[in-house]
Each structure stands twice: as structure tokens, then as C-alpha cells.
Image 1 (spheres, rainbow, N blue to C red):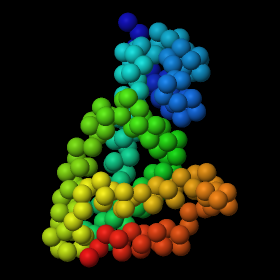
Image 2: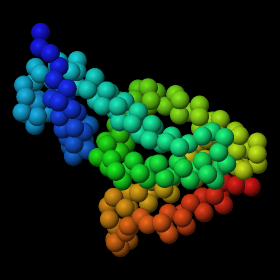
Image 3: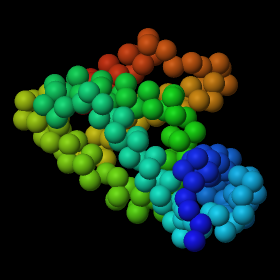
Image 4: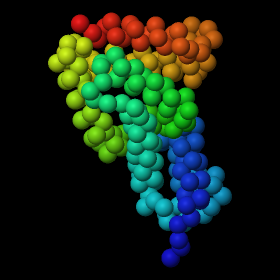
Length: 196
């Protein structure tokens, strides 16, 4: 039996992420991946049982990295303002420093693999965010709204700004770079919307 080569496995993961981003989940295939990596298809099956296993494992790994970064410096007993600001900074950091992985994770999240990946990586996150939100509501720092409404208001504008930044232009076609002033303006509007 052939042994695992950690370096080769990392190359496979990186190339798979690039291919998923450029070709989409449906256009991604094991034969093409093997060719791009300069290895035999049989070598891929040392690391993954099939295409679905590879996609799921890559999605889980990216998700775990994302959520680990998202909770860097975060505590459930932070004030609502400080906790949300921490979340914004961490999300911006991940999206700007790991753009390929962030894009891949979004594609996988909205694919047929999304539910399994999300279920695997969000347990601790859901628990911490629920505790954070309930504490903020109890301290009267946050209005009580359904989670989906909270998420849409708290992060929707941030992700739109990150998309404009990634594209280098706004919807009007005007050049766009996410800077401190724009980020702070958006953040302050989000706070106004969510605080009593």
C-alpha cells in the first residue's frame, strides 16, 4: 500500500480549492485535479475515498480555519459593540488574507455539500453566538430579533463591501477599496439598526 505524502496532499488541497473557485463545484473532477497536480488519479484515492469526500473534507478544513479566526480575541461576555466589531475585523482579515479559501467556502456552502459542511463546523460557533446575543439582549445592548434578521443586518453590509473590495469596483462600476472610513460608516449604521 502506498503511503501518504503530506506535501503532495497539501498541493492536492490547494489545487482543488483553485479549481473549485475557477470552475465551480459542478465543473470540478478528480481526473482533471490529478492532471493539474501532476499525479495519477490513483494517488488521489490515497487521500480521499471519492470526489464527495475530497470536497467535504476541504470545506470542513476551510470552515474550521474560518471559525477559528473569527473567534480570535472574541468572548461571549464582551459588550455588543466590542463583540460585533471583533467579528467584523476577523471576517475582514480572513476574507482579505485568505480570499481563495473564503470564495471556495462560499461556493461549497451553497452547493449540495453545504449542509454537511456547515453542520460539521458550526456547533461551537452557534453556541457562542447564541450566548453572546442573549447576554447583549439581557444587558439591553441589542434588540431582540430573529437570528436571520440579526445576521442579515449585522453582516450583510459587511459582505457586500467585501465583495465590492474583491471586485475592485462598486455596483456603479466606480473604483472601490474598503477603507477604515467606509468600514466605520457601515459599522455605525449597523449598530444604530440593532441597538435600542
